[in-house]
Image (tube, rainbow, N blue to C red):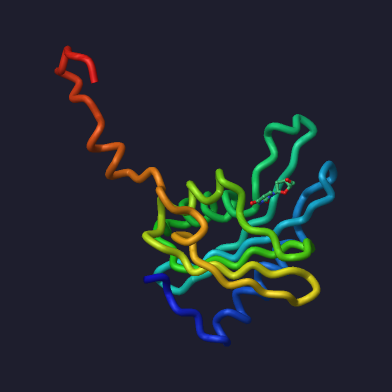
Length: 149
Ligand code: THU
């Protein structure tokens, strides 16, 4: 079950995501994204998208938040707010869904936009069939094995 966010906690997370969005570095797409990731100890880590003149190096807000959280010693998350100005509010891209799934069995997700619209969903709902660390382990060949597969 994803964490249940109280209205007060959701409002706080949304405010942090909107503030992080203001710091996005998006001179190429002009699509600003902010993320607020709630860790299992209750702390909140921010992220924004950071673009680059070499377009392929652009990093999404959600993945920057995950990276910052890991650097800060947090590896388990229970909720995320993602702020954009799109209508309706944008969901995380596929790459970010996979990265979030590595650190959360399920995640409460609040998508918001700058006009105040909110969409509530969960990671499991928008990202079924996740490739998990357990699947990786179960398919890893031992280094001493010579056979195929
Ligand atoms: N972007 C995010 O930050 N998160 C997503 O989940 C989707 C896309 C960013 C990447 C790029 O800087 C801009 O939005 C346009 O794709």
